Length: 420
Ligand code: AMP
Ligand code: GLY
Image 1 (cartoon, rainbow, N blue to C red):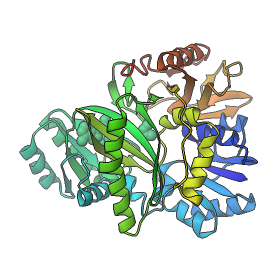
Image 2: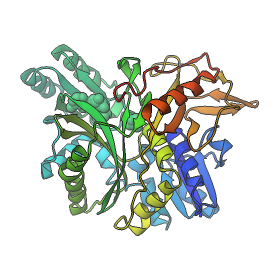
Image 3: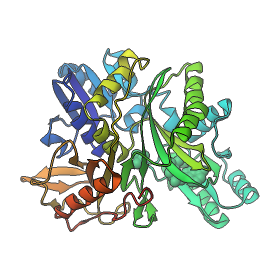
Image 4: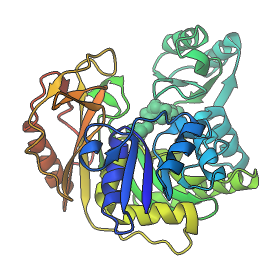
C-alpha cells in the first residue's frame, strides 16, 4: 500500500517509523515532514490545511490510505474532503473534531450523558464571566473556547489571576479563540492520557501515557506542548481504565453517533484521577505529541493494522498484542521555548545515534541546510527508548541525549519522576 501521512512533528515521525515496519506498506510519504522523517521515507512540501491540494497530491501519488496527524487539518475538514474523494482516511470528520476544536461543545456532550468532568460555565460576555469567577472563587480554570495551540488554558490559583485571564482573553490575547470562554471547576488529582481507537461505534484502548507539560524540572515554569512522556501510566490501573471507558468514553462516543456525527480515529482522553475516580479534562482528536512517540515504540508494526482496521474494516475483531514493556521519551527544545526562541542552530552528533526498535531519536522541528540538521521549531527532538522497565528505558534515553551536541537546546532531567 501507498500511505500518506500529513504532518511534520515528532508524532508524524513516529507514525511513519511504525508504519514502515508493517509488511502491508510499500511506500510512505509524509507531507510536509521534517529532516528526520526524510531520513526514513519520502517527504513532500504541501499545504496540509488546503483540502483541494491534499486530494490532488494523494491522487497524483496513487495513495491508498491517509493518516491525518495534527488537529488543525481535521478541524477544517481535510479528512472529509479525502473521504469524499474516495481515499481511506484515518481521522475524524470536521463535525467530530469539534470534540477538540470547541471546549463548550465537549462540555455539552458530556452533560448530555452525565460523563464525569469539571462543573463549568460558558461565557461570551466578560462581565458575566467575571461575576461567575467572583461567585465560585479560586482555584479556578479559565479556557479559551477554540483551538489555541495548547496555550488557551489558565489554571488560576487566585481570583485576581482568573480575572486577569478574562481581561487577556477578551482583549484578543488568544485571537478569535478567546471571544468565548469556558470557566471550570479546578480538579485536583493526577493527570493521565488514555488513547482509544474509535471506528464510529466500537472502541479499542491502545495505551496510556503521562506527559510533562511544564517547561522545567519539578513541574515548574510555563505550560508547553509536552516536554517528555512515558507509557504505560501506572495511575491507569485496570479499574480506572474500565471506569474511564464505561463512564466517559463509551457514553460520549454513543452520543456523537446519536447526533449523526460518529467519531472515527484516535481519541486522546485527558483524565484527572483522584481516589480511583477518573474525570475528563479534555478530548483531543489526534495522537498526543510526544505521547505518540512512546505509543508507537511500544506498538511497532501492528500500529498500522490497528489504524487501518479503525478507518476501514471496523474494530470488532481487532486486538492489541500487548507487550509487558515501557517506553519513555525526552523532548529537546530550543532555549526560550515556549516563549521566543532562535531558529537555525546546528545540531551535531545525530549520525552515530542508535536507530533500533528500542532506541530512536524522533525529529520534531528540524530541517536540513548544507548537509547539517538544523533546529526549525520550539520542540526539536524526542529521544525515545523502550525496555523491560521504565527505569531502564529512562536511563537509556538520557544516555542517548548525552551524545547530542546542541548548546542552543535544553531538556528536562526528570522525565518519568512520578512513576519512578
Ligand atoms: P487542556 O488544554 O484542557 O488539556 O488544559 C491544559 C492543562 O490544564 C491540562 O492538562 C491540566 O493540567 C490543566 N487543566 C485543565 N483543566 C483543568 C481543570 N478543570 N482542573 C485542573 N487542571 C486543569
Ligand atoms: N502532549 C500534549 C498534546 O499533544 O496535546
